[in-house]
Amino acid sequence: MADNIRYIKVADKQEAASVVLERIRAELAGGLKVLGLATGSTMEPIYAAWASSDLDFSEVTSFNLDEYVGLQADNPNSYAWFMDHHLFSKKPFKETNIPDGTSANLEEECKEYEAQLRDAGIDVQFLGVGENGHIAFNEPGTPFTSITHVTKLAESTLGVNSQYFEDRSAIPETALTMGISSILSAKKIILIAFGEKKRFALEQLTKGEETTEYPITALLGHRDVTIITDLNGIQP
Ligand code: GLP
Image 1 (cartoon, rainbow, N blue to C red):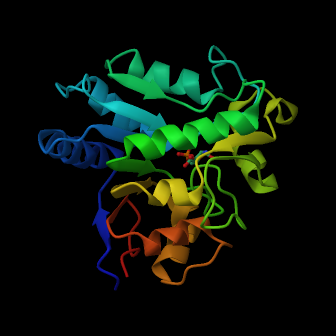
Image 2 (image 1 turned 135 degrees about the horizontal axis):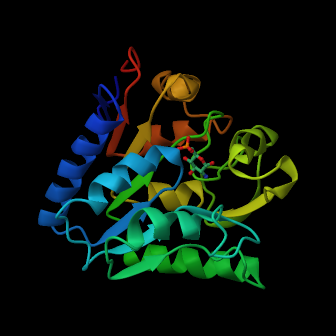
């Protein structure tokens, strides 16, 4: 078993939130300054625990992984709204960054976002995982060398994520996302996955073989990854 990846098996989401809270408390004490943040239902209990804690993020700069193209920040399906609602309105940060999916020049926005995050240097990056093994919005087939870019969402992702939209046609088919190389540039990575729907994706990682077919397997090439999951039998 590769020792660059540590597995923490938790009983449930609440235990995961406590584990993450204590880990972040320790990281803050150790000088964490730049945090990479994720969205999705997985992160909700994590952020709820931070929001009601005594943790102080006022010296921390954050970079979010991704954003839909074309959704304004006041649209409840935008990741800007998600972050504000679940965390930023409750815990002040020094500075928060989310790719702007409403930019008139998306290519330029991606270039600038990548430059900013590389310049800042992410200390700890949080990740969820898609059922198809995507990380952020890096869909199957994305090169591991990719940096922040405009991406077309996979059919399966549109299917899964459209549950949050009023109908299937309302979900944007494109998004801005940190690339796989952007994610791997973080000093430490914490991936959280709950429930049987994520078993297939985690199993691709435990097979131990890097393949662009399953973007999650790019984590095999990183030196400090923690996987937190409530799934039994995942740890290799
Ligand atoms: C979206 C996001 C990913 C996230 C994934 C899982 O596709 N772009 O960053 O990891 O959903 O979402 P959930 O936590 O809701 O399962």
